[in-house]
Length: 108
Image (cartoon, rainbow, N blue to C red; front, side, top):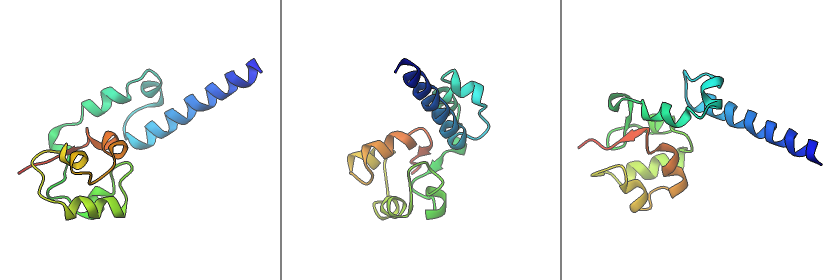
């Protein structure tokens, strides 16, 4: 039983690394394993963030968890004074907002 739990933890750790590497380009698996994924999203410059007031559907769909329906909803509810309005106006669910909050900006 103990061996199965250890194998399960290793499998979960590998899945987290894989997912983080796929979602955060340029980040090595070693950095992800040390918990650097949060630090990597903080290092995204405001210039490279996606502007929710001007982005196309294709640009919005590059965000994690945002597909056609959410991208169209974001566009339909424009303009936004700040990015938090995605969640407060219930344009997208809170879980989806949590994934993209460090990757977007709302320019006027």
